[in-house]
Length: 177
Length: 449
Image (cartoon, rainbow over all chains, first blue to last red; front, side):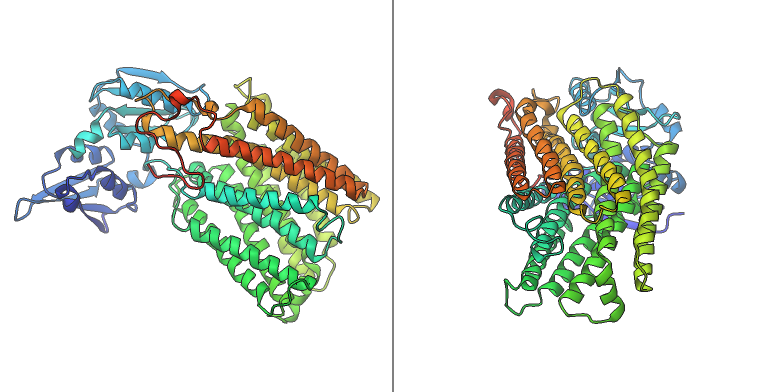
């Protein structure tokens, strides 16, 4: 089902001491449905496997001459990624621990829901999960979570009115480390 | 999908738009253009286009560059295209003004100003439509509000297309007969497409979402909203498509425009019902200044419609079309624009400055960036001046109109000063203004933090 791959070489960024995580996530976001990612890195980026796994990608990693790694990420179910890029596959939520904190932000004036979620994440431990209910997709929150290295999964509940987001502290940051 | 970031050039669009508003109000104050000059005089056309393109279209384009991505939950297709589009639109407006000055005989340089205006405005609007269109096409969900925007953008293309034809015919670049016929009789269609389709229909779509968002009211996606969309689109297709075809067949477009007005009226009644429902069903009891002032803009829209309904059977609509257009442009569109700018500038500035440190350091709230009590008087003065100005136009009292225009200029200046203070964080307490890691925002563009 995978037609093409987008190539991303983060080795120059890593060698310069840089942080390629955002670059990787932006590339993944820009992938067309059915498209995969071919990543070149200076090490085997193990944590990235789970982050992109949560987004529905399978991977194959092979070591290149000189100790660098080439990892090919394929959209495992091209249909599910095409259907909703913001929704993690439902069966996938089991791999995250139970939320240690719940927030119901549905009746708060914008941007208070975002303020409370970010304040809560700052007080939590790495690996903890926060669950928050919102009344719309938090479009301005998501880039901020990515910047802070947190992983997230979110989608509308079946009623179409409540948006439920799970945030896992530092999960994306560890992926890039 | 990693959400939506700040549109880099939206503040530049807003700044250029506000300058155009102040210039237009200054020109009205000194008696330039209608009502001192005729409705079709080059001076009036200059004034009208400074308002329609310089103020309202730049305001709408700047807002849509930020708002369309939020509506469809899809990053803007290109942040880079926004700046050349802005440059092209401003240069195009300047060329158009020079073209009108040539018509009036005030500029006798032999430069192809109208042709230049056509090319520049055409490419500017095309870049905006392309950028927003690609964003919508890439989106996975197209909520109802964004369908209004898509229809509005189509009307923008129609308005610009007709305007370019007029400019090429006026400038003598084109002599093809059907286009000359269209130029002779197509003005009402151009006005309806611009004010009704592009500016009003887009504003209606945007207002559905903004009012629901800021008042914590349920999103409307039901039958009345769909009815408003479909009837509105039908009215616009009838007015623009039908109007152009009738003119090309050498017929008077009056009947088609009346039929379109009847359908459009039904759409507006559904919209009015929806808006009342949003205000009534809101969970937030105390609403902020932008939502309160938006109500005055919506009342101005209702008053414009009422004025048309009263004047039409009396056969006086043509005589008083200036007053009606004035109330639509300044009461409804500018009123709504200024009211929502007051909130949007504060919110975007807050997000740009404090988003990166939220939860890490004490930060001000969005409402700490504004002082509503101080801004309220400017808004009240603005709306009172617009309403008095409309009455002055109906009564053909040119001097009174100039005085009300001066009041509008002062009020708008006051609102602009408030916006600049917001952007400069001037109303934020010094202790919390710049926590570690926060940079003072630039006035005219937003960082991608």
